[in-house]
Amino acid sequence: MKEIEYIQVGGYQLPNLKVEEMHLNRFGRAKLDYLKKHDYGLYFKLLTKNELKDYLLKVQKEADDLYDRLVEEYKVKWNVTEELKKKNQIKWVLMMNNINNCVYEIINKEIIKI
Image (cartoon, rainbow, N blue to C red; front, side, top):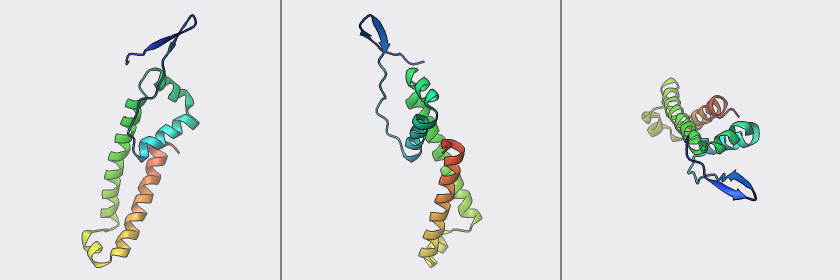
């Protein structure tokens, strides 16, 4: 557990809860938003233990790894190649957008829990 600073307020010692500045991508921000709206207990627990940043970065890395793996799998499965990109760019873009949307939906349901 990380060190928590306390401040004196009247006769009480209160934890100085502050959210560290985090540079989160789409998945990290989505998980943070989910925690604040739908799982406030876990959010508050992580915040009070000063572990929120580590948790969000772990979720973000897991989502990024899954995204990269699934995009490559779908490209092979649906035969989206560089050759298709050279021959028919519009079809390639449409198929890549479809792959991205499918992968985002999977990640949102499996990791982010939206």
